Image 1 (cartoon, helix red, strand yellow):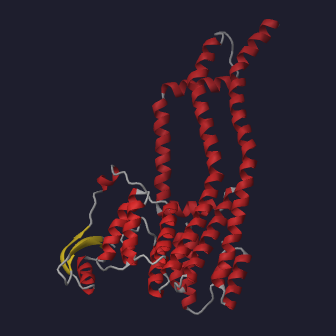
Image 2 (cartoon, rainbow, N blue to C red; image 1 turned 90 degrees about the vertical axis):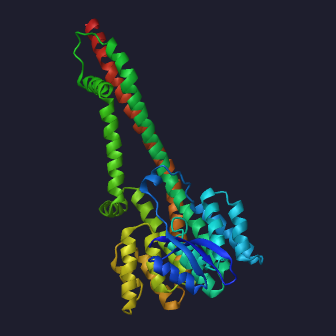
Image 3 (cartoon, helix red, strand yellow; image 1 turned 135 degrees about the vertical axis):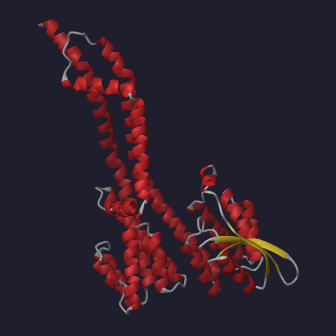
Length: 402
């Protein structure tokens, strides 16, 4: 839905402004009237796509949101009013994007819009799960507890992401380093050796390959550069499409070594999110619809949607999970027990903790396992090139000795 900026006047004659989400301009005006305001101006927010190309905007990380949630909970628990708390946090937030958004949210709440509706106007900062949890906290009168759960949820999610980064960062850096070394040798080292080869000596096949590749890179470097850029952009464009996302979603769980990490991370994130939503008072159907997209997997989302449809027909949650090959038997059994005992939220939390510990243990051992393999790879690559360059000299020495 589009967003609208508004300027309204209340019954006391004071003018307020803010931003809200609505299906249309008439719906926005109607919502403002129900809040007791007279609309002076309602305008749809339109931004040129070219403006976004040159617009540098710092994103709000999960760590920023976790800190904000914890600080907000602490100040509300101390008895400080919500509007005053939001204004105070907007002045001290380290992230400029979050700081600006909190100032606008505080003004919106001050004008009479609910806190959750004010957050809904910033979907790029506050996810649907976050807004739904805050709304449940407002209705249930336990906003402080809900904010604490959200902060814990985001801390756990950040820990999972950090584990994934630590497992993939080192291999990517080593591969990039090997590519730089290979390019530098082809551009600068190989030409030096080429000038040293005797003209009447037949070069061995490995040497001819290296020399030919070096000459090709020197002459047509722009073609190689454009090819690399084209491949990278093509892959990114494909992965941003629906078919590409589905293909990657299926492939990432089947990757050697890393597939297990991705799968367990997704299970941990889904279980943690669902547990947080249920413990925060969100109804089961809404919790399933919200937790699916936050898992980061299209397949998981489809299973959650199927589970929501089956629950509406009177079936249990564990049944659709059991039919899917994405959920191990341990998960389906614990979900089934949780439904029977009424402790589903607690058991989902235990599932999340189990897989979070598994991911942490795997990534910790993976680095020590991959490090020698990558070193051997880089050393073998450089060594093969050096041997190929020295082979003609060995041939000359053998002929002279003969």
